[in-house]
Image 1 (tube, rainbow, N blue to C red):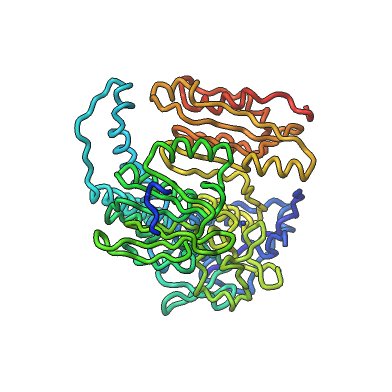
Image 2: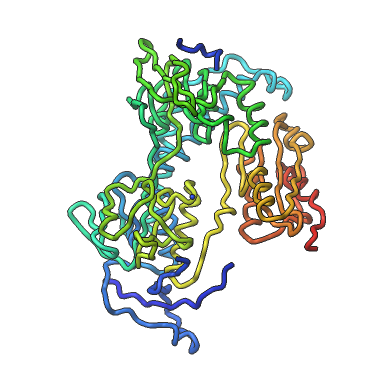
Length: 531
């Protein structure tokens, strides 16, 4: 049984069918867990320490959900000396490892090679000639499944090796310290909800998993349709358009917003359209909803898609395609957790939390001992954000107040070339400046002057830094180009550390590297009013 030493943390100050051509109580819990230590507390610390003897628990911490967020929280909890268990009702690794980030990167890697080898003009500029390029669809699909299996085993073994108990079964709350799973139950001082999300399917769309499907089924790559309609032009849709077009399919995006890639910085979206859409077998329709989608039969009967005007909801057209990928975002997976037993009222399925990831009840009060991270709370639906939230929650449990700065969390779209960003778009920054009364400065550069990009003959793309003109506070950075997903972290870490744009001006970057693209942007930063 676990009897926990608790520390009271001192407060911290915080501030007709259409043709294919036609187209997120600022209170750290009062009972918190201190890291176990063989070192006696200092005299001035003893007054802050008391022993909780009201309950003996099976565990210091139980985590519901063994995805990337739960895994990251479990590893940090063990590091902090907490006896930890993780409950999983499905497969270790969650969405990211099994049906998301990991296998999709395998598909993108393989299809990207095919695209490169088919680009005879690009290869000729490098002095390379190739003959007939062939690929095996099943081999590419197997690569994705094998990668998922490898990473899944790695996650499992890392938790077992550190002594995390892996409990199998669907978890249900009995109270805020008790969870049942299967025909068993366990108790814990703290419980973290890390159940993730599932693909969101709008009403009127009939999923058959074969001709009309979500990313879960698309990752299996069971067949390659000649013409694929993708509902939604966000990251998921863009990445799959990259895969499908590289392997010979035509793609049509169906987007409800006035422009495709509506979540992108406007300037980056224009670049992306020029590079990722224009030269490829991709077209799109905007301002329309796919209000009814009827599955077909591969090779025999097309999928029919009824398109309606976004504003009037009147039917304006019907498309017939070979397949339809529904990439309309994700919904929290919180049904069946028995949240009513702990007085939680979800908001569109999301568990409400404060900035320390503590779950809130119907009255907005902290539920002692219950936390929620990742897609299930809806603050930022990214695997690495879930992991970071889990680590921050553990820190708060251990009496070390920690609030994750979500503006510092980077994101990336792994197309060829990639798109990455941290913080705001230029449009969002200027709107904030207008509202709060400050000017915004934007600095830009191109990959076309970068030696490494030119050596690769892949100089398409740009980088832009967005910051406050008066203080130098970094509001955002966007990059599109070769290895953009790797280049964004200098800016994201700068935001996390509270650095100013001018602090980055004198950083040194190796030559010749792609990192000099961001170096060129940083060197353009001038003095600020505050200095």
